[in-house]
Length: 617
Ligand code: AMP
Image (cartoon, rainbow, N blue to C red; front, top):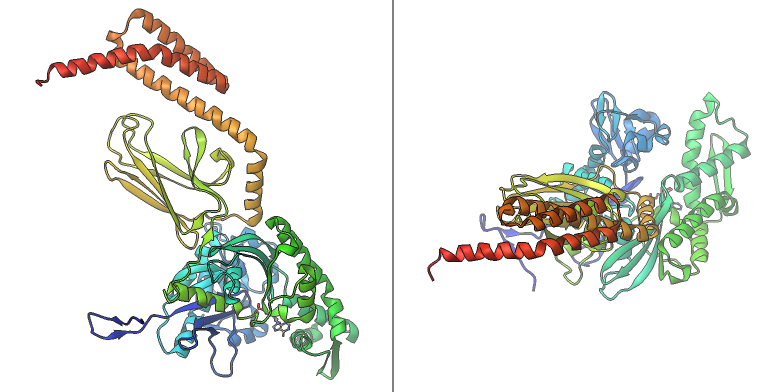
C-alpha cells in the first residue's frame, strides 16, 4: 500500500521527496530519476536538447558563471575564463597535477599555505570543490525546472579509484550546491545496476566495466555477490579518450592537406578542424566514409583509415584490461559480463576489439553516456526506500585499527568488511591515575602500526583518576555508506567521550593499497615473530611495574629471603627484556611469577582476614 505523508504543522499532504542520481563527469554531467509512472530510470532533458551538460564553467568579466553548452562556446574565445576537466583536480594538490597543468589553458595556483590547489579566474580563486558546485547547481536547477519541484537530495557517482579526499570533496561540492548527498557511488557499480546486474541478492557475477569517455579511460573489475559490490581492481589512463581520436583525425587532415599547423594564420583553421574531426569520428560510428569541407578544403576520411589511427589507443586500453585482470586475480573467461560505458565506446572498432579481447559479446544496449546516471537514479530510489528488497553495500579495501601497547596494530574492521559498518571494543589504561588515552588510527595489514598508514590521532582527555586497568574505554569505528570513518572513544565509567571524522589529506591509490597488501603477505612471518616479541616485552614490562608497586606497598610483610629472590628475578627479567629474546622473556616472567605468587597470596589472605575482623557477622 502506498503511504502518504501529512505535514502535521500545516495539514498539507507531503509529496514524496525526489532523490536524483547525478553523473558528475570530466567532460559531461547529467541527472537521472526513476520515472514515477514507468518506474524506469530516465535521464532528464529539456525538449529537443541533450541530457548531457558539458562540465564546463565560464566566468564573465564580473565573475558570473555560465555552465554547460553555452560555456563550451567560450573555450575557444576566452580560454582563461573557461574552466573544464575540474574532476581531474578534485582533492588534488598542485604537486599532484603539476605534470599536466600545462595542458590547461586556465591558471592553477600553488598556494603554499593550502595543500589543495586553487584555480585563478580574473582576480578570484576557486577550489575544485567550488567549481564542481557550480556544475551541480546548474544540474539541480535544470532538474527543478524540468520536474517542477525542489530537488534537495542526490546520489553522485565517482570513479572507483577515487580516494577518501576526492569522495569527500565531491560530497562537499554537493553540499555547496544545496544538495544533501545521500551517497557517493562508484561509477562501475552504478553502470552495473543500470544493466540490472546486482539488483537481486542471489546475483553472483564477476563483471568488467570498460569506460572510455572524452578524456579518461577506466577499466574496473567488480565482483558482485549477496548485494555487495566489490571492486577487485581498477586500471586505466586519466589522459586517454575520445579527445585523442579527434586529435589523431585532425593530424591526419593536417598531413594530407599539407598545412603548417603552427603558422599564426592557420590557428583558427586548425581549431575548427578539430571540431570537424569530432563530427567525422561520430559520423563514422554509423557510416563508412565522411566527406565535408572547411574553407574550401575538402575533408574526407574513411572508417578504414580511422581504424588505423585508432590502433594505438585500442592497444593501450587492452593493456590496461590485461593489468586489471591480473590485479584482480581473475581469468578472462571468468568475466560474466562486459559493460560498455562512455561516449567513445560507440566506436565500432573499439567495441569489437573489447569483445574479441574478453571473448564475449559486450553489453552495449544502453546509452553509454547515460548509463552511469541511470544507475545512480536506481541507487537513489533504493535509498528513498522505494525498493526495499536490496541494500547496496561496498567493502573496505584495507583493515582499519588502532595502535595498542608496543606499537601493535589492533584491527577493529578487517579488510573486506561490509560498509556501512560499526564495531566497538574496550580498552583500558596502563598507568595509575592516567588522565588521557591516545587513540591513533591506522589502515593496513601489517602487525606493527609503523608499517601501516596513519590516518588520524586524537586523545580522550579528562578520564578521572583511577588505578591502571580500571577505566573502560570503548573505542568504536563507524564507517558510513561512503566509506568515511568516524572514530569515537568513550570512558564508560565517567562518560567522558570524544570522536573524530577521519579524513585523510590524501587517500591511497590502488597501487598503494596493492603494495600494502603485498607487503603484508611478504612480511607475514616477520610480523608474527615481531608481534610475539612485542607482546612478551609488554607483558614483562607490566609485570615489572605491578611487582615493584606491590613490593613498595607491602614491604613490611615480606621476608628478607623473599626480597632478595624477587630482586634477582626482577633483574633477570630486566636483562631478558633488553635482549629481544621472546622465549627468554617468557621464562623470566614465569620465574618472577613463581617467586612472587606465594607471598602475594599470603599478603592478600591476611588483608582479607584483617578486613573481616572489623565486621560483625
Ligand atoms: P563522455 O565523456 O562519456 O560523455 O564521452 C564523450 C566522448 O564520446 C567524446 O569524445 C565524444 O566525441 C565521444 N562520442 C560521443 N558520441 C560518439 C559517437 N557516436 N562515436 C564516437 N564517439 C562518440
